[in-house]
Image (tube, rainbow, N blue to C red; front, top):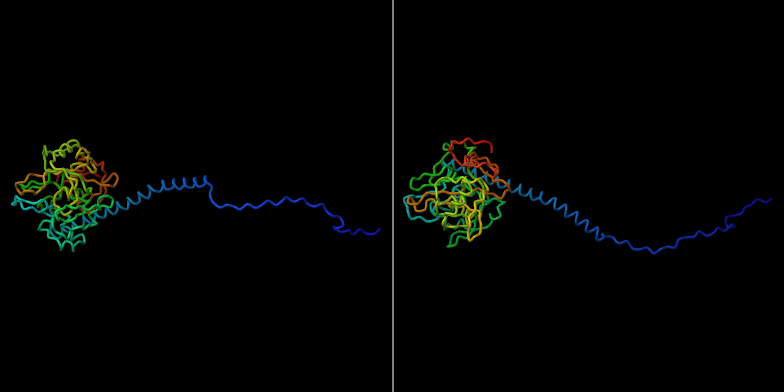
Length: 357
């Protein structure tokens, strides 16, 4: 029987059914509306989480720079003391002259210029004459006198009448608790600075690490002056302070805007109230946070009246003010510090026991 040698071609297969080819739709790359909204929501959440951290980092940097400014000011005071064997007076006043101008004497800020690498400026001004018409300081901002956190530190003042345009200062010097100066006796307050003072380290019997040298203040502070006080006793509560402030006959909104001026409401602070205290006054019916100076110290020479002041240390750093002590160290002080402790830090020879702060 012959062998079968049939090929596959002899047995045709049934054709395999194939699915018809569908037209290929083009793929669209991108987000749907819902996906886009989800991405936007996620980004918004991330920004909300990161923004406070970024702001805190920036404030920490500004706070560090502010502390560095205070450190430079403290070192400048030390260098001044080394050269002159005394701390600079807040002003120099000729008490024999009874007809005086408003701005006759330069502040501590002006006296320490050569120790802040401002020797060229110092050589162009004359500290023996009023600063009012000395054009070397016109429109000149001294960076070390401005806290970067103060939003008004870059706002220059135009005093008018041909006087120089001035940038404010946000660092004040310690004038003590409350009493500033009595022209009749020449006696000054219990702080580190007052008119015609001649203090040195030996006068700081409370200890240089327990006595304030300088602290932050706010630029363009509202204040009242030339009135009262109803009592020469230091006020011990905000309500008492507000009653004293209300006695001021003149209202100004220019506190700490004249860095060369030797009056305490421009160059200093007092420890009457704890840091960042809100001492309210009104002007045109609007409530304001105010300072007070009973009389411009040195005005009218020995015939002038004694000066008392409530000039509060204030800061834009949350919850604190930064200070420099007489020993040159700088640190932050809580706005919740005990009033007795704050006042003890303001006196140079009060004999108080100062605890940790």
